[in-house]
Length: 293
Ligand code: ZN
Image (cartoon, rainbow, N blue to C red; front, side, top):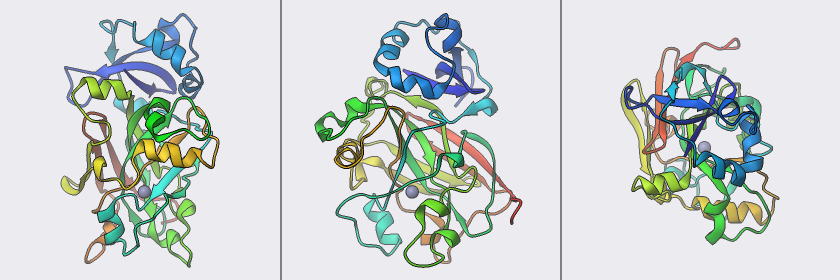
């Protein structure tokens, strides 16, 4: 099952066989006769009920969706968790030791944007970080890792765009601020349920992901290389924080960021960034001058 945020309304979607990477779908509020609200964020609070209904919906009447109208799949999460240094090769390129517990920070929700369109550059050195993003269905505390996937509504593609100048302006690093300029947290194009990935023969614990800058592959890895897997993160986060329906988790990036290169390379005006997770989807963004650059 796949859902998307289409023009601010919840849509039940599927890949469009007529357009590579495109989606077609139906408006949930309309086809459910108002049973489910149009607000994409509201669905996570009624996830089990929604799944029961959505799994029986016939999508043969689905219409092509405008990719430019797609928004973040969870636009106003109660909490946003982001995990740093969650891949061994990325910790090494960052010159940091591998964490023994997840290094957690936040991306403020005002930085959320959709899977296509322009992103304004911030004043500093702006970097890319492809990430698998999980959205929670049922929350809770002290969730065992063996039940971690049961609490995940689905997975989507994310970019943890990062202003390294702000992030490292003075010790200790300012992760939350450097990664929360407007537009620095794009997600989409759709949220794909874990059972849908398994049905497609994919292992949700080992998905290939990467990003391309102006057509050149700059990051390529597998989520199987994460230090803390998605179910592990659910367990460790919920051992401290009460998790809530619709919470968003950015799970970390593999090697290949711009700051880890010799010489370092950062995003510039006109750059095109394509971000993908196999079986989940692809995003495409162009970088434009910001009002402070
Ligand atoms: Zn990151």
